[in-house]
Image (cartoon, rainbow, N blue to C red; front, side, top):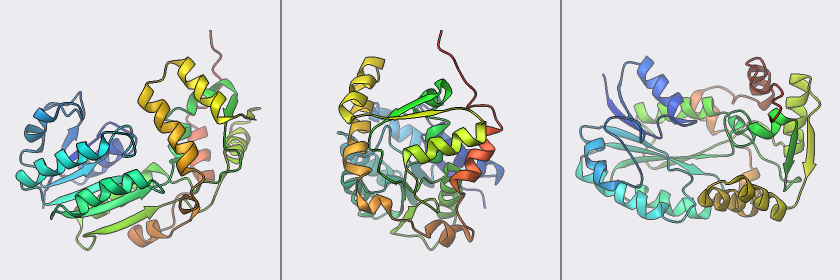
Length: 278
């Protein structure tokens, strides 16, 4: 049976993949983004009732992250509109090892709407579709927290898991923590990409203070700088974020995509070719 599903952040890293999958399955998908019609903007709550009108289910991803100031209030307001519009299911993308994000989780879990939480570790695609891409293309990656290990999860695995919980019963009030199958340091990540691309990529450990100063010098938005500093100080060193789970296998009946498989596939696209700044 066709379902009406709103995918917030429907042009983002996870949202676009979920939209593709739901469309292939023949569902009525509404993309929640500033460029869509009707337009969804987290800073324009007056438009939310129009966007949620007629929707059965919603996938929620908050930008830039549930940990940032103002996220809790936004999730509260969105959940209230969902209640008023008779939405039947909410699936919230949350952060693994983030106390602030867990406060947002409780809002939707206590809403009375069928809710599932998906907590994700950092994505493989952060190195091909996000802020780590540029340094890789330029051949020099400078990052702090060199000893932290992360079980990177593939965005395609998360999309498959999100579609499963959106479309099927049995996931009410469940919290799934999605990870990849092994832990990697930043230096290990760069080494794997270097090997797959045949490039001489240099990894340089730096202090967090220098990293934050560099982001500000690049002109990154203040909330993004705050978030990255928060992730490096509060999340990466959180032991909870370094635990490998079997939730992908539990949800999908298969093992998660390994980082090396992601690297091999991505290297073939040419996205990591050297880019020399003018």
